[in-house]
Length: 214
Image (cartoon, rainbow, N blue to C red):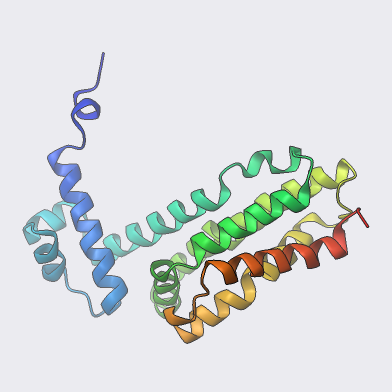
């Protein structure tokens, strides 16, 4: 039997929830947690304040949902096909594609704004900093470590400590551009050509240390 909601698209309640999340995301990123008011969220979402509170018990719950959702979506984009990575036969080619995708996904203005916001609110919401770390770099490192271990077992890499090698790869690729964007603002986010060079340089240095080919 076909579900009517699935057939006809989102329900009215779901549309309102998405409108609230979209409006609140814009306001939190622009004005921060303390600078955002629930009546502003309601006005921008074109719903009543009562509707906002019906969907979310308060501003804190709304903020947690936004951070968790944005982190999860970004992580899913980066980690697609990660489980098959170590089964492929060309680590250099696969890592280059992975690194370019990771840089492109992470280094967007909204995700950089989110990261700055969470860091700024770390004392108020320590669990969110942990969630951002676990859904971002920790998730990436864990996926890479699994791939590196499989490549090493197949003789395609020389890796004794897969988690350590994964952490090194992650920061070879991400460290410098993320630090620049975090500290210098969105204008410091590199363009596509620069991101490709950053990915290629990181992969080249990593393979010089861990690769098996001359």
